[in-house]
Figure 1 (tube, rainbow, N blue to C red):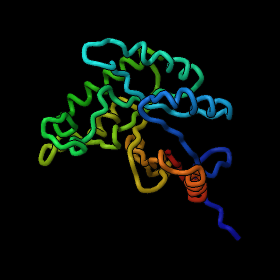
Figure 2 (cartoon, helix red, strand yellow):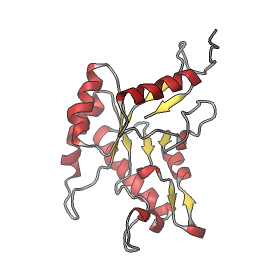
Figure 3 (tube, rainbow, N blue to C red):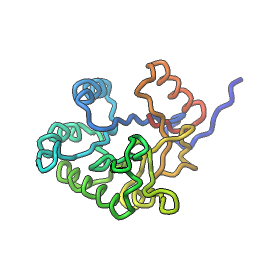
Length: 204
């Protein structure tokens, strides 16, 4: 006989799955959102509301299609303006990266993204996704987590983790998630079933 997993989820639910998408690609607008809408599902889309080139103020035009996405009930999440990751992805010390940022500079970047998102959708509760799943600034002795910055401004923050989240023990501002852009449909179903079997919250 299969043991019943006790969970804190309401209405007899065994677990939960959150669908998240990064960077606001055209395929999300043209493929993912219509498929979600057809099935009555809603997701979070983490956007970088930035201009396309230096000195060109075109972010309102670039972000215009996302206003309708928000109106349809999807969340537009904050993914910073500049999408900075570790400069270790590159091969030059001149490359701008999280190592050269401070808590003050990353907060300014995040808040400008938030100002622009609120200009699009109005104020409201929003979540955040760490670019490249990395939640630090500085390096060596100056390295610091910017999770407290995210906790100050957002309801939740998504990073990378080992297992599905348990609602009673997870850090809402450093939620564990699974990158799934190269996984098959069967693998995604498997992750959802794993979360239900464990009474946990899967973030994809």
